[in-house]
Length: 458
Ligand code: UGA
Image (cartoon, rainbow, N blue to C red; front, side):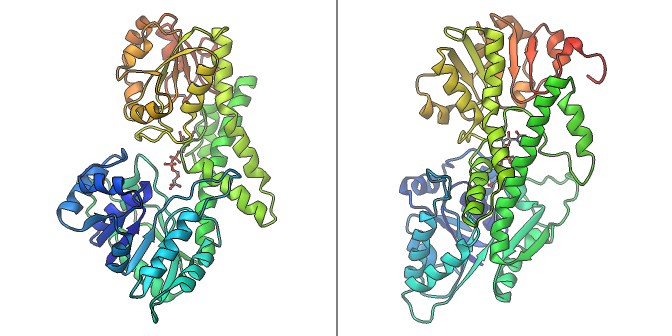
């Protein structure tokens, strides 16, 4: 099939590359000409494991190309994926101006009928507006538009693998023809026989995904409902962690046993600094707003959002309690990205932690395997180092803010020797309390008891 992908951000780039790898002919465009020029020169603007391999191969084989000319992309395709940003406005609603702009552009430039698919995360009923805009602004007589919703469930850091081996593919459609077209488009993935470049021959077989066909409004709701529920789970685990700290439980023991019930599930119950990134926090906020607009008070999500916003404060309480005076203290930070395996720092808890530490007069030195360049744009004067041991050198405290595997594997004995005071505050419950205490650290994490007081289960 001939596909256009409009918007070469995170979702557009991954989806476009993977759809090309699945055998389609893809033409991708973006309103940032510098981004397109970089992509044409083979430079990928984001760090996403395996994306370079897929992109290289599909560009080389001529199945994916980039153009700054959106009209060209529209005219040369039968199916158009809208993958533009829907950032939050001041009030927390999703800003849909980019979708509106793209809808009018598609209507104006199309010379043949198209299937137009919303892939960007949008509030329910956007499909209705999209359809209307396409009809109103169409310029060529006889051209018809069908609209569908196909929400994305990719996780940053594992997006390529998630694309080829999803749990489910959700499509919201109005016409049988759109369903058939989308089923055909995803056939290589639905049949589970797709040659995924990430999937090694010795990988276990992959379960074939569910193909879920719904109305457009349901598909739009499914995306917001999924991300919001993930946020709910995390906040629930974080409140449990606070309770464990007060009552002497261990949150890992509690969430592990709770999660063994398949009705609950063990994933996304990891306590710590809370959820960041450009999806969960923004989608919860937009969902609350959407509900409000529909006359429904989603107090449950408001509480989850509030709990999440308080996590940075909870970490800083621990830091202050241990360090007493913050001014002039040297603090090392391990991890800036909102989660491991990405360079994305948007709404990363670490950014807020660093901002507040600096405001209190602490001297911060930070490291992250991939996110330092982006962090430099936010904190140009911060001291950065590629070397975690240098970050620990002379530090009064070391904070773990992103659980990169590289940090877990550090020579912690050596880290201890480098530090002025061997104090580690682990915002991601990445390290083992008993081991850290044995190595001579003062160690704090979330919802796990002081190791010196623990005898069993550690
Ligand atoms: C999220 C969803 O997981 C994807 O399914 C969705 O497609 C994507 O948003 C999107 O809407 O585009 P992502 O933002 O990449 O994916 O990150 P997650 O893996 O969901 O993690 C979000 C945050 O929650 C991270 O800061 C992570 O550290 C935190 N988290 C995650 C916890 O604090 N505890 C957990 O148990 C799990």
